[in-house]
Image 1 (tube, rainbow, N blue to C red):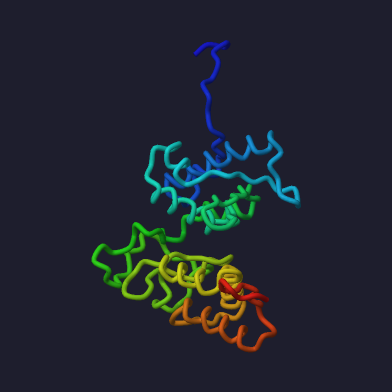
Image 2 (image 1 turned 45 degrees about the vertical axis):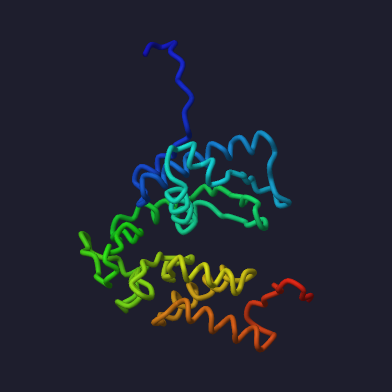
Length: 238
């Protein structure tokens, strides 16, 4: 290189990603999404509140980073759990709108926290047994409960991921799919509700999926209070 050498095309790669407790593929996906968000800024792709969004199907992201669609799905889930993106579903067979978030100072410190042992899916025991992984560092008590049953293992030994604002709601992918199917309009809100409730009260539950399902059914039966579900089945009207 000389003083006149032009740099080849490159992706924006924020420095906080270097130390963030995220998988390498997840960091790469975030850089690609951030690059696409700059294009959306140029084209004026924004919602009614002025928030920039991108439309980037999973297959295209996988092709862009030369990884499998499953790797991209896992990366998007991790980014959403970390609060670095937000996805809005647009209906059947339509790609999601992805809102890329820029973390502030406090969020960056949280993302760079090395005290928590990794809770990603690759730590799930291959034989499905509920074996607690060895911790190479002292666990922080901020985001973990004292109940071992709430570590990232769901029913039948399936590996669960931490969800919610305080990363204290553990659900498997199957449980999330079931909640989404049964309560399509409000399932995410119940996850946040449970996360905030446990963080503020210190209460624990044996099954977070069962707790969410019980709350949602009680609210639906009462027809008032809590989070109202305005979804309806085909042929029904509100």
